[in-house]
Image (cartoon, rainbow, N blue to C red; front, top):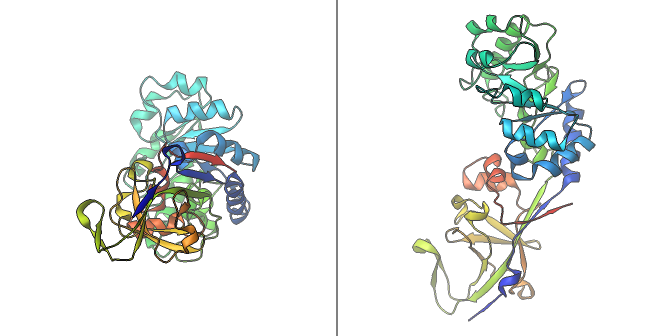
Amino acid sequence: MSNSLNASKNKSKLFISLNAIKHNYQRLQKQLGGAQCGVTIKANAYGLGLEPVALALQSAGCQTFFVAHLEEGIELRHVLPEAEIFVFHGVQKGEINDFVEHNLYPVLNNPTQLENWDVEYPAAAHIDTGMTRLGFDIEQTELLRGQNLNLLMTHLACAELPQSPSNYAQLQYFDNVAKQFPHVRRSVANSYGVYLGTEFHANLARPGIALFGGNPTPLKKNPMENVIRITAPILQVNRLNDDSSIGYGATYMAKKGDVVATLAIGYADGLIRSLSNKGKCYIQNYETPIIGRVSMDLITVDITNVPEIFQKVGQDVEIIGNHYTISDAAKAAGTIEYEILTNLGNRFERIYK
């Protein structure tokens, strides 16, 4: 026996707390003491919306922002006319005029990008201290002498592992290079690096995931506030008269008497497929595990133990929130909080609070 919801009401919702983002920024600034707290808001502010997030962070006192691509920098400049904006991927051939016109600073990563730039204009430089992705190696740092640098930065490979010896090895490497440029600001710490110790704070930190509720202290309780809440309505309720398989591939067998709800959310919305038979949702304070595979537009959850008053079409179910955070979802899915956030799709009704 089943009943179903009118199609006009089947919208999943993404609630984003700008107040929580501002609180998290202020918490990070307090942790940094005298060092400046910049922010990394690449990938559309980790999927949460560049403009509202940037304005909220500016109102919280942030003055320095990092993005990945030139296009992101131009978009952010339209939102924040006076902010200091750095572009991680540096300058490509023919882009210098765009950087100058929009008052953006490239993070120069290699000799080719150095050639693409003009010493007349300030820029940052990235030193590769062990990540082996982007950055000048130690033999190339001589090329930076005489350049108009306004920031020297590196990126830690194992900052989420506070006991890793590579953190201090990278820091020592970077400090040795930075001595050659004594008047240039330094930046080392991402979200995790902020909590490694004051020696990693340098002049400017650039946290990202912690702003949005990710845990920068994975071995301890999360000091950040939860930022997002995702809900989806029940489209259909099935009260099983027999044992029944659930979803594609029949990966879950529900028992006679179970109550199964189908929700209007799936991997096209960013609920990653690896949460199949692993994720958890909540109705009020009642846990409703995901059963069967996450499909493109739908998931199924077991609501057998939920009070009957909530076992109804149209009932909102919390997918991510205070009961089940992005950290919980990432752990269950075998991934990281970054992937949970940046996968969030455009089909949500986005509600900023």
